Length: 309
Image (cartoon, rainbow, N blue to C red):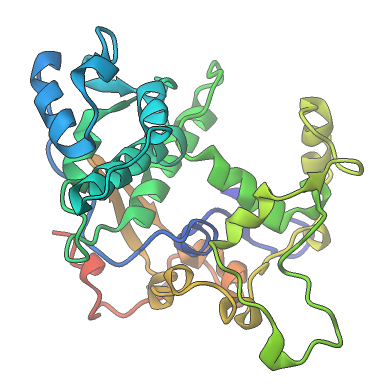
């Protein structure tokens, strides 16, 4: 967590379940992301890959699968191939896309060029019934790796979804954000309310449009560190999202809104971290009391994610 302090208590700030769902559109409510980390011979993975990804042994090659991990380049090559007309073909292609996204964006680790095939077991069933709390898993993985980087002064890289961190920074620290040329957030003042366009994708996608770094630092570490060191509470946006924005976002970005203030364990495989919204109350529009006094969500709730064990 980052702390913003002056003579008066201002509070801490961090990435929360709200940010994961609003920016990435990932579900919060669902089954815990856990299971078996498979230790299987590389040759035994090939029929599994052929069945569920539709990638042929020829496309995999001799070095496409190593130590239970498949090269992301193999997945990207497959995405450029023409997809078949059957439902099975489309499901296979969807798994290829999801697996590449897991290794490259959501759960990146020290092996930057490949992704564990153990993830494939979690997406064999693509039906709505197999609803996993992907958002909490991504956040747990990120929390653990940010902690590792913060406590290891010799660390030269950070694992986890750094794209999520980058977009979180852009939303809350305008002095570090590029200028968007076509920002979906801006609405003409003379536009009638019934003509305000909806935002068709997760909110974080707006940072992939045309932008310029003319007035912001880009890839200059010393400048970024200087700006962060001199940052004041007035230069930090505690609430970059509001009800007006929520009304324009896709349903997937606001579906689990009651769980954004969930206080408790979040899980990714064997990693268990704690989501503590009571330490960042200002991000939810509340006053900041002494953290840890009470839970922000009732113990009895209808949401399945609370029933972790």
